Image (cartoon, rainbow, N blue to C red; front, side):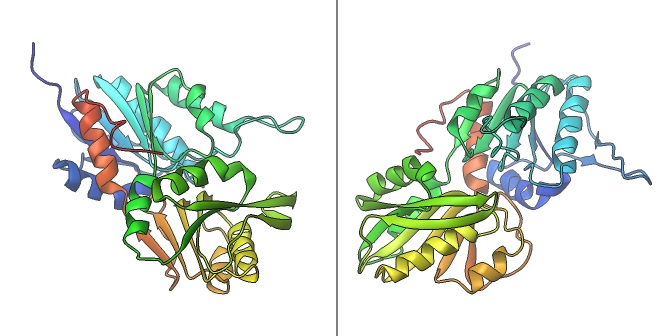
Length: 312
């Protein structure tokens, strides 16, 4: 009766590339599952091994299309019906997180809806990374382990050997994140203030702070069309910066992001591999989050603290 429940890790089809690395880090084999697709596009996730009484970790980022979210929900439901002991959803990227509040009439709070769907499906715990807004954790009625890419990026930045670093936020909403980087690196911080004409379209941008003769590090949670980050880089160079690099946890990179980055003042852009790259770029580089997520999985399984691993 006192035997420890087995640990099993499964992957959704969108995140197989990352889950294999996570399994290597944890030291377990990737769980056997399949996802047959019907002629009309409907799919049916299925576990190909027993999971009764097991700690089941399901790794799936929920970037578009919404099939990725639906597959995760079906995998959670299947695990519950197969008598898994605990079901932990690991979302390296939590989609729909930008819809975290009702900022205009007649809109959905999508992040809350997704939280409710995951809970209704039967999830016992969530592990995710760099939510668009910290308060999304409060949308859940189950524990949420919120990891931060800064735990990977800050040591990497320290090793880059840049001469005179300043941390920059591409918008006012990211000041808390930028302030954390600045504190950990012992540097100053500047802020870009932007106004939008509409979603994904920056109307104007002004700089608060001094970047002259500095090596600027722009930090953000995600980059989608790259309009904001490339406009901010151009502004930094115009204001006398030596160089500009960007670090973001999630590389959504919708068109025309690749062209904008390639033609921008940015020297390099770094992402985690929470979302797979769509194509190659000379300026875009990836730092794997597999070991960090693997360590979090091991500590959750062993009922150990993970807060000491990941600072903001």
